[in-house]
Length: 291
Image (cartoon, rainbow, N blue to C red; front, side):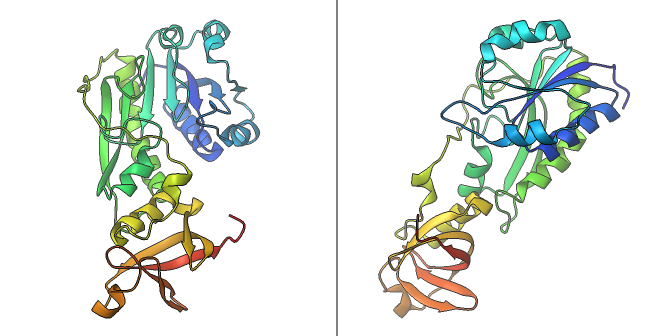
């Protein structure tokens, strides 16, 4: 695909390997990444990713680490960007920044907008047992994830996927979508307006991390999948664990009458726990007594 050359500023808190991949993709399309802007994030959404970006992004690309978003329009005006490209940046961009590039600002969001707007779309898609995920590239406006859609593609969420296994799918999808999104941005395409209504994917914390054994086993398995390598947290017979992988097991009528949260069996395949509906076999769990 032949594109006009554009000067791009890239806003992100993605891992450096993703940042470098996106920079290389832009260059292969004849685009110039002027600067990568990253951040430790607001207090409600702190991130350590900026350290990885600062240390591991290619040495021929400048990196700016900031929490002073309102200062950015004046700081970046001299670079005369054609486009701002955003992937997972936790700050809302002020109007003066949105209007700075002559072709505007576009954002990638890992859901099929308007579904799962907000800061934690992957977690809630897995948590809610969705069988289809996706990636959306949209023009940015004053609110998070509400601007007109330029490109959108879906992919299946398989039963054994967890939140971590979705990242390679997103990268694969993004590789096919970025050229089309850049072409539309360069042409000044307005995009397709989103409906006002949609769903929201809020931040989650310690309360969402603990397994509640009164819930059905299928729900708890999705919760484990949603936390991925970070692990869901569980209390079993007075001891605390991190759970990384689990599956639902049908119980005999006798075992199903046991109290919820009871350890029914501990073998080389895992720990079998009674839940509010069915058994949950913890196939990968780690004892964490200090938590």
